[in-house]
Length: 210
Image (tube, rainbow, N blue to C red; front, side):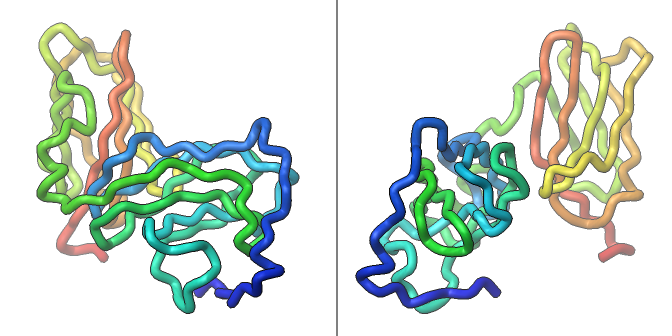
C-alpha cells in the first residue's frame, strides 16, 4: 500500500514547477466503474516515483489518513498509461504528482464515474464495429458494416502491453478470433480498416481459468 503522509502547513506549500509543457489528459470524462482510464501525460524532471492519482472531488491531496483513491507510478517523463476506474460512483479529480509526495506537477480533468449499467448505452467505439460475445469465453466475432473490411486486429492488456496481433489477408467484414490463450481480465481491442481505427474494451471470462 502507498505510504500516506500527514502534511504540515509548511509541507503543503507546493514546489513551483515549470508548467509550460506539463499536462495530464484523459481520453474522455465519463467512465463506468468497470472501465480502465487512458491518461496521456507530460511531466518535468522525471522521477521514477512520480505518480498519477484519481481522488474524490471533495478531498485535498495529502490531508486524508487512508487510501480512498486509485494511483499508479508513471514509467517515463511523458507517455500514456491506464489506471482502473474507481470502484465508487462520483466525481473525481486527477493529478500528476511528483516524487511519491503530493507536489502537483499537473492537474488533469474532472472525471465522472457512473454505474456500468448507465454507461452501457453510450457508444464506446465506432458504430461500424460489433464485437460479440463480450464478456467472452475466449472466442469473439468481429463484424463491420458491409463496406468496411477488417485488416488488422490488436489486443492490449490494461497496462498497455500488446498481447495479441493478427493481420488479415482476406477481404472480409466478419472474423472469428480465438483469444483463449489470454488470462481472464479486461483488455483493449483495436481493429484497423483501410480508413479507420476502432477501439473498445473487451472482457475475457473463461470458466476454466482464473
